[in-house]
Structure formats: C-alpha cells, structure tokens
Image (cartoon, rainbow, N blue to C red; front, side, top):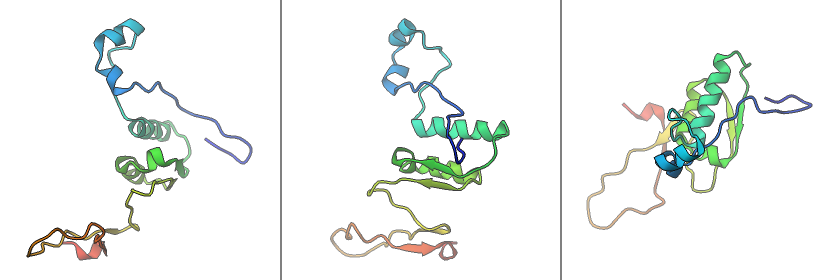
Length: 128
C-alpha cells in the first residue's frame, strides 16, 4: 500500500523453501505447522493480492521487480484480477503487446533446425 507520503506492507508471510517443505524432521524441529506447504514467492504474492482485494483494499496498479515479473503465472494472475501492473523483466523474458501472441511454429520441410531467433508475433485475430 502506498501514498504520496509513505508505503507499507499490508501482508507478509514466511517463505518456506521447497527443501524445507519436504523435510519433515527439519519442519518438526523448528515447529513449522503441517498446513504450511511450499509455494513460490510469486504464488504467495498473488494469493496476498487476491486476499487484499477480497478484504476491501482499493484496487491499484501492482508494482513488482523481475523476480515476479519474469513469472508468467504471476503476470497472468494479476491480469485475471483485472489489475494493471508494472513489473521488471529480465532480458530473457519474452512478452507481447496485449492481444498479441507468438505465432504457431512453422512446420518447415527440409533439413536443419530453424533459426533460434525466428519467433514472430501476430494479432489474436490470426488464431481460430
């Protein structure tokens, strides 16, 4: 939550690494409740955003760094919540304009592999 004057977290939760989530002895030794399961950080964030909206927090754009912006499910989840977002993405992340998607692969005949950088984009109107 942010204003012109300040920002503050409205949700927080312990991140439990997958190796800990799968180690019953370690979990028991430190008291991790059985109902806590492994989730990625983007999945946790999306769940917290959903809960905030359900609890009446006003809708606003979501800002996130590349650790979240590189995650397709996170971006798609924000879109499904009808929220706008501005996220960082790393150079290896491929994104398209709204309503555009990569064209289906070209079923080439002949030998050799297609060039790795031959991905084209097309309008959603091009798909059945």
